[in-house]
Structure formats: C-alpha cells, structure tokens
Length: 97
Image (cartoon, rainbow, N blue to C red; front, side, top):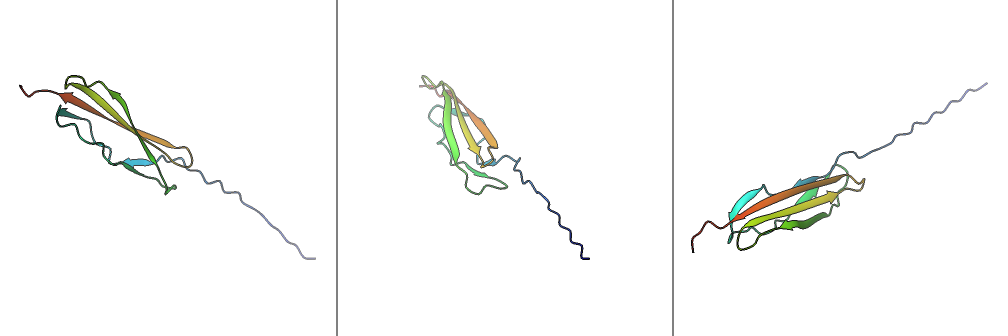
C-alpha cells in the first residue's frame, strides 16, 4: 500500500507601511518678497514603485505682505496607506518703505 500526503500553506502578503514623502521643506519665516517656489516633492514606498504626489495650498492668508501660507503634500500607495505632510510659511514685511 502506498501512502501519499499533501499540504498547502496560505501566505497573506500585506502592505501596512505608508509611503515616505521626500523633499517636503521645513516650516519657515520669509520676507514678503521672498516667498519660495513650490518644490518638487517625490515619494518612496516599500512595495509600490509608481507613486503620485498630490499638492495643494490649503490656506493662504497673505494680505498686504503679511500672513501665512500652508502647503500640503499627500501620497497614497496601492494598498491605500496614506502619508500627508505640510509646510507653513510665515510671511512678514520687516523692510521699511
């Protein structure tokens, strides 16, 4: 008599690691005539190689050369892990006319 056996193993692969934004600038204070351009922010991920970074200016209260600008970058990988980072730019006018 010949005995045979078989077994199977199910392996579930999960991606619980959110992507990482690269190049988001730190918060800063600038003169009204020196507001920095929006940088090109990219992203990396442990599983997803094709990522799209979304940018929005969520707030801009600059009036008469003073106020704040809030910039936000968001990236979502294929497993819906989300990373969001913001930069707040404080705009001042310290130069006399």
